[in-house]
Image (cartoon, rainbow, N blue to C red; front, side):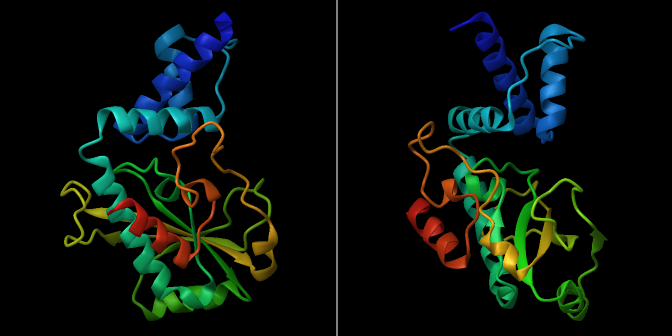
Length: 218
């Protein structure tokens, strides 16, 4: 392996540790990993997010094998319950809770496909949920209508670790026809053959999530 590839892999592994242990975002984790390994280097071979994600998954399998499956199953159960309540808005789970890299610091990300974003706001208000509204990343495609974010108490009856007392939820609200656009980020099954097909899908509806939970908690 060329020297740059070795260093790139080392940076990815160091960044993955920061993601898993400290809950860092990927960009922050990569910057800190470069700083820790090389000092202030602007010529370091920076791994992409997919490389870091693979290393996060590897790290969790090696160092959290006794605790991570239970945490992941609990977060997926929370996501499933939310999706049941939001079923009229065609919810899909994305992100770390779906792809298996979630930690105790991870948020739940749901994509909703609607005729009117205001309908979702009214639904949350009627349910007594306090939420924040923003427009999401300006460079995201397809462009979302808005993103609604809130905190919810962590259920205590599904095996989540006691230190997880609240869970952040982000509802990414899109127009209905945006469902035709394939997920932009998906794990590569060729590089990670042990992934469940739903984990590798990049986006999972309620029936697929239920199948994933059933297949991975037996």
